Image (cartoon, rainbow, N blue to C red; front, top):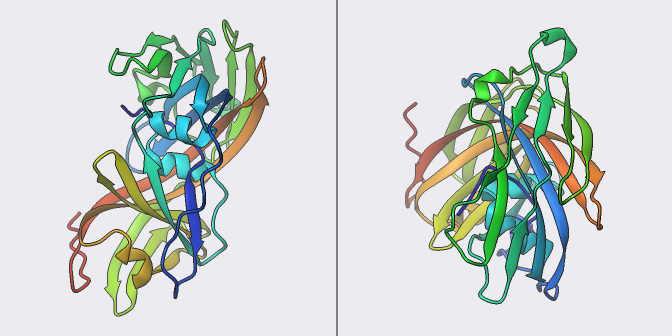
Length: 284
């Protein structure tokens, strides 16, 4: 069960010449955390909004958030690798048998577009989460009509919620510049990814394997990145999703401890097939 949210993930910084590894996991714990994501996908109208605030038990915050988030959005919240480098990541999408998550009601969520657009605020009411897993219950937030919230690069989007269970939310986040994939090409020692609009961006390669998502998380500059073959080896051959993303974020405190991360993401993505020997096939 996944919604359109992000949060921190596990993984190890991977030097191009070394094999990927996973760090030791911190002991399970409990706490409160929230996430609201505004997302604009290149070529699509408007801005999608989704969000959750949760109380989690007998697991880490990272584990709880990955249960509910798309893996690449969750990785986007974590610190980026150093420029020009990659990390191998793994996200677990199932709730452990001993763990539980309560999704809290923060009242109606209102998102106001930047003043120059002169559009009406979007009001998002909480909706009950379908009973797909007895360990996870409560309410979630997502916009029925993303096109009702227009996108303005550099614009200031304001969010407010009254807070029924989690306390009030007041935050503002700036929309990052747009980004789109221009070219993906096989190289002798890996894969080259190029994106439009130049500048820095995060690049993710990912594939689902059972209840896990395997991924490579890279940080690129100046509109191009070379993903090394040793990183691709962690994914193996076959179809993968390649996305390029930019994000801005702010945090707001929660009643009872913890914080809500508010993030605005611009992105573009496509599917590629990685073969052996390395090839990419990506008609668009």
